[in-house]
Image 1: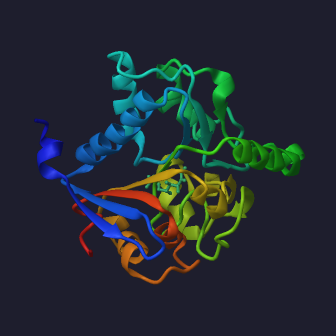
Image 2: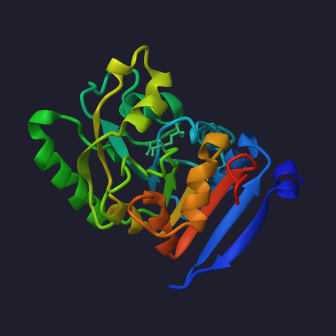
Image 3: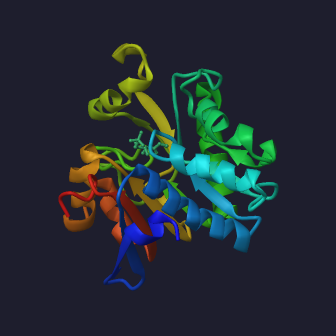
Length: 260
Ligand code: F6R
């Protein structure tokens, strides 16, 4: 048996509106990545033409590595998979190394057999933005996401739904908070290089996914995870909206679970 099976433990919480929330507390980042990959691999085996909602940032990199390994050992294929990413920076060209388009190709798409036509990220073309956002929303209405992967910001954001974002929003252009810009400074040389705005799926869009898997690791996520799971459901803590989702798995390491 793998260590992760021994260590991770799961608390199922019944929710008032029906549905189950699974809280899975793992020892470390490796086990969080393993557990999340098991959910996605099982999904891809059961439904090879799954529609996946994907996140960027540091947290899902381990998960994506495990999906690449599963592909390389022939356990899963992405040939018929369709993906929709949560967000993309405005102000960066898609070819910029820190664009989310580049991130996804570097960390996942370049290593699997996905059809490039099945990959969708929000457009960041300022000239066509309004129409492109509408097209993205229309596509997402036609393609219900089977499993949406989410990280969480230290301020409780999901996608780039910063505190105060209405729960019913669809994909929209938004300003990034200074906290988020500072959190993401590690990917850039100087704060002035960190984009000030982005396009993101809204919480309304995210909530339409059949299943949501939120992953979080490290002490700097402990406050957001506590407020998300134990605080009031409020736009001040965007991730708290997920408590109204009927099929939510929250996979965290011990550090992110510290305040629970
Ligand atoms: C990225 C995204 C963000 C990140 C969040 C956590 O697509 O949607 O909400 O998930 O900012 O980022 P990391 O994982 O870098 O801590």
